[in-house]
Image (cartoon, rainbow, N blue to C red; front, side, top):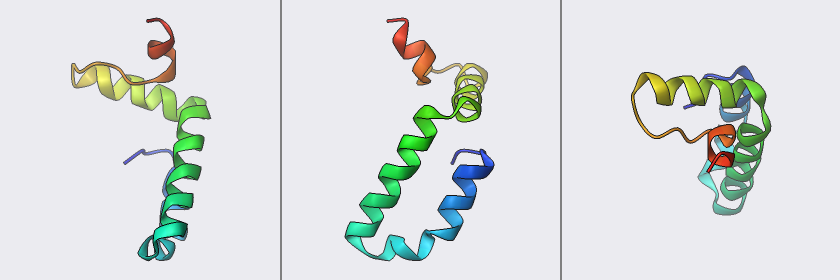
Length: 65
C-alpha cells in the first residue's frame, strides 16, 4: 500500500464501501487516479522500485520508454 497520507486516509475512511461491488470499483478508480497524479506517490513508488531492484512503475520512468 502507498505510504502517502492522502491515499491512506481515503483507504481507511472509505473502507466500509469496499463491501459493495459498485462503490469498490469507484474507490479503486479514485485511489488509482490520485496515485498516478500525485508527485509524492510517484516519488515513493520510484524509490521503492529502485530499493527492491525491480522494474520501475512510476509515470516518469514509463514515459521514458
